[in-house]
Every structure is written in structure tokens, then in C-alpha cells.
Length: 441
Image 1 (tube, one colour):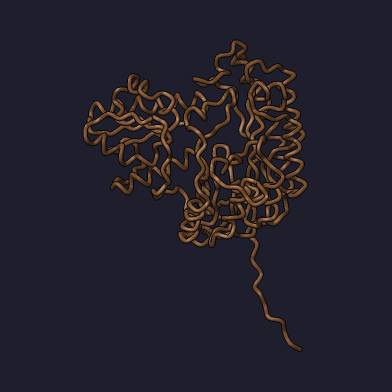
Image 2 (cartoon, helix red, strand yellow):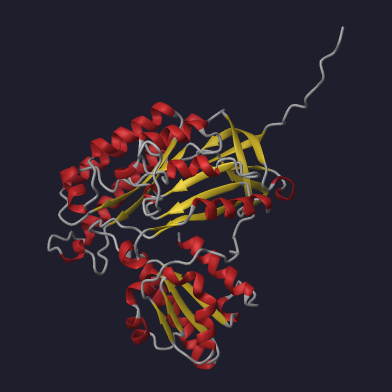
């Protein structure tokens, strides 16, 4: 989500006449787009700012902007801590960047963190890739997980209309993009704030309906979506993914904990049994589907036995990838106030043990690719080996193979997998057989 916001804001800056600089020390304007989901991300912002504040004392016309979730969370307190800042703006204001900067250039110090209706995105993002693109479908989140700061900083759910989403995808298809990832903080909630019902009384704007609506956009070969919430993940959605050829067999569904008491304390609204049923249903319809997720260890009050339940879930399911984190108290969240916080030693120990298991299971899951021919959408050159290109399978596994990026970028290439690792693969390009006409006797 932050990457998508960054691309949109970079597009606004380019439209205003700014040119991109690889070196922050050569820039006239620096914008930090921030994340506050964990404390270490927040601390990085202050570390980066420290250096640029020193530069600003020597170069007063340097413009410093902090955008995103730390900006939303801290607001004017950020100005008190770093008075050299020119603009503090929350993620809901990303599309207003030009208007806000014009106020700055008129001599004002600006804080934009008030809740607003997000105007339909008419900006042209400066996209980092020419092959894959993010498309926002819903902003904000109405969930109230006890550890999570996102609803406080990203605001209430606000769905874009199906027409606006399809229109953006059609433009991307015309520009040569081949893969779209539909984005939402809680993407399964898509459409519930849009009016309308079907003839049978069902709400007509769901993520499933959206997938059917955008599936035939010309030029787009692959569609992904993230991030899902187990509470709203339906069999109807799974069936749609199995039926629609462009929708990739890759599902990112955070479970956070494998223990029901911890899930209840987190206010997640499901049990580990329900989560397992979702994965079983996915694998019933798509046996080879890739499953990735998020997990938190050492949540306040988590016992060793409860942590073992998380390990058991990871062992039983066998994730292709798992984003793991030790619990980090966030300002304004209920769990941060509880007095049963666990020590840093326990957090570190549990995170290390979970990561070890994750790597083992991912390596096991990778074995199924050995010797297979996989369709790989080529995205870029391998930054560590200029003789290789890299891309992804439909299941989102990173694949490296020998090839020329000028020739192959944006193409889907059959690759025979020769080497498997926990989180990536290496292979050889398979020559596509030339079609021949039948010989008449």
C-alpha cells in the first residue's frame, strides 16, 4: 500500500516539474513516505530526517516532507520534534500533494492529517516497474484488531467504483503492463460501502464481483489481490479464483496466531479451525495454490503453549512464504496499554524459532517445482547477475534464468526449474516449439 502511495506522489512531483534524484543529498525536495505498523520503521524515519535537517540548516530552501502513517499518527507533534519540516501529511491526503506543496511554497508550514474523503485518483503514478502495477481498490480499514494502528492512520473504508478501477486497468493494459495487483488494507471488505444489491438480495459489489468485472481487461495477463482477512474470505471468492484464468493461484491471508485465545485477545474474529478450513477449501479447488500469510509472535500474554499452537499451524499448513514479526506496541492501540507485555528476550527467541520453521517449510514447498516447467513473467534483470533475468511464477515464486532483459521484459516465458531454494528458484528457458503445418500424403 505504501509503495502504491509513493508511486502516486512521485507522479504528482514529476507532473509539477520535479526530476527524480537517486541521491537524497542532491535533492531540493525530499519526501519520506512512512510506515508505523512497527516501531523500527518509525525510528528509521527520525534517523533519516536527522541528516537532512542538518542539510537544511546549510540549504534553507530544501523542502522536507513527511507523508504516510507516521505523519498521520504524530501530526503537529512531529513539527514540535522536527521544526524544520515543511509539510506533514497523512496517507488520505496523498492525492492532494500538489495543492499542499503550493501552500508550502507560499511560505506556510502545513499539517494535513484531518479525515477527508479520498478524491478519485486522477494522478499518474511514477511506477517502479513497466511490467507489474498496483491498483488501489479500497482505502482504509474498519477492523479494530487490538494491536493494529492502521485504522487510526488510514481512516475508514472507502471503496473505489468498479468503473474507476477498470478504467485504470485498461489504461495500464494499453501502456504494456501485464500484471495487476489489486490492493486494499482489508481487500475482502471491498464494496460494502458502495450502494446496490442484486435481484436475489445479495450485495452486488464484492471483491468476487469485481474480479469477474475486470477479468477481461485487454493486455492484462495476470491479476493478484492483497491483503485478505480470514473473517470475510468466502468459498464464492475461492471458486471465482479457480474459474478465472487470469487470477493467479496465490493467496495472502494473514492468520497472526495459531491459538484461539490469542486470536480473541487480538479481536481477529475467527478461530484457527476456520483459518484451516479456508486453506483446505483453497487447496480443494486449486491443489497447487501458493499460500502466504503474516504472523505475530509474543503478543501480550502469549504463553509458550500458545506460541506452540502457532508453530503447529505453520507446520501443518506449510506456507510458501510467511511475513513474521515480534509484537510491537503501537500508540493508541488497546494492546499497547496492557500490563502483560512480554520481554524482548522472549520476543527475539520466539521470532527466531518461528523463522527457522518458516524457512524449513518453504524449502519443502519449493521442492514441488524441481523439474517442472513454469510460466515466468519476466520483470527485470537480476541485480546480482547481469546475465540473468528474473520474474515470478503464477504462485509468486521468484525465478532467475539466463536471458536478455531487452528481449524478454514483460514476456511470459516457459522455464524448466533446475534449482530450488526456500524462497526462489533457478531454471533454464525452454525453447517454444515452432508450430508446423501437417504434411499431406
